[in-house]
Length: 227
Length: 317
Image 1 (cartoon, rainbow over the protein chains, first blue to last red):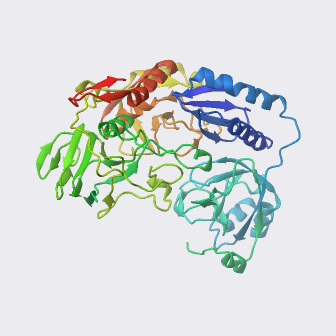
Image 2: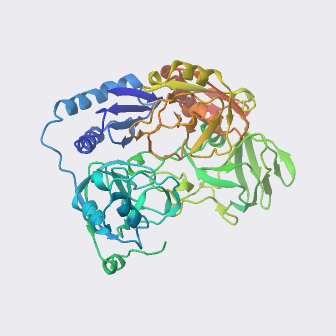
Image 3: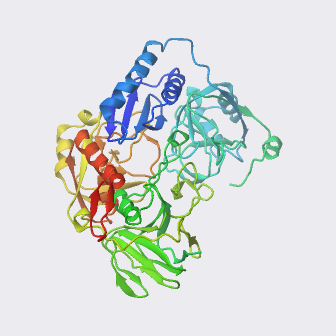
């Protein structure tokens, strides 16, 4: 489905519900649109089930833009069952602890688990980046094991330290910068998620695996323990 | 070397151009001048490039000293501007001499004043744009501070005296009518709620900033539930659970999951962004072809007109 959003924006919807296969499909479609070299293309914003395309209204109007996008969308729809796009695998080290994850203990007791179980379950799964947003480099990843899923905190923290690893429902994410936030924090990652030069480390469609590391390894990798 | 030295930056003054293109998939906001109309005219007065960087000054309270002779142009909010304590008009070119003191009083009618310098501001470029998004707290992305130097890219260039014709200035005192282009979720709103949205008067809320404007009025009784987060267009109207609309502007986050009956066109976002808390606005339904045509005409006017020798009007080329 391709629809007008505003005078310079179009929304392409690939599915009605979130599916595990979507991030790879959406990333693939975004790549194809980019490599088509449309002179009117301004921005592409992929998300869970959609792709927002921003165009230059001086170069093209809505109808023309849709007619140029349609073949790419149709092609994607017909070959969506084709061999799965693998996506880049990124490993993110995490120092899971009560020191860096102020919600770890409470989350464990609410889930009827030990802290070690939360850590094991969180780092056992390969996640997909479904969307980027909220802040530069903030990647929404899914899906966490249902037994450790927990809603956002009712009252968000005023300051979540950079690198904090959080859970919100069945999503997980790393806060690239210190910011306000309501996710349940279980640890901290020393790897920068956003760099002024190389931009966001993660892209929609990437595969991510978290690896538990020690306090020493966290500090050696440049991690900071400041609250 | 001529430049303006900032003595008092006011509530918040940031460098803005027409925004960042091509980086939203990294989670970076587009940024850019909120009032596209006033920003564009400030540059047009000085024959600057369409995307030249200007200073966006929120609520006035700004003071600067000229070092060397320098041509500037001010547009936007109706507020008292003085050079060496003599009142001067906005919407025209202004020649400053060495040592002149430029002040912009606290603005009580509208929100934003744009200050352009010849050639545009010589400001650092990040991610293909000069626009500063304070909320992202990235290195080098802060508001202007006392002591900062505003350097023009072409300090020696000077254009003849010019004034934006009255009929081409936005009428910021008129009732603010913001058009709404219905989007694909529009049919999911109840008919009574659409009638409320398009017939009520809304008041600009206190918590309105570069991310978005909160409007307060008759709440929509039963907005549809949240959607799966998707890309947000400039001007998108979000209806959160309390039924009060939020019009999302240049610094908003790139994706969001509140339902949206539609989008306010960029030209109308410009008028809205000039309004202070307490101002009245209302929505009016419009269509894509109309607003797309208006936007094109506005851009073509920039590219294909030039100032007459009198400096009082423009001619199509």
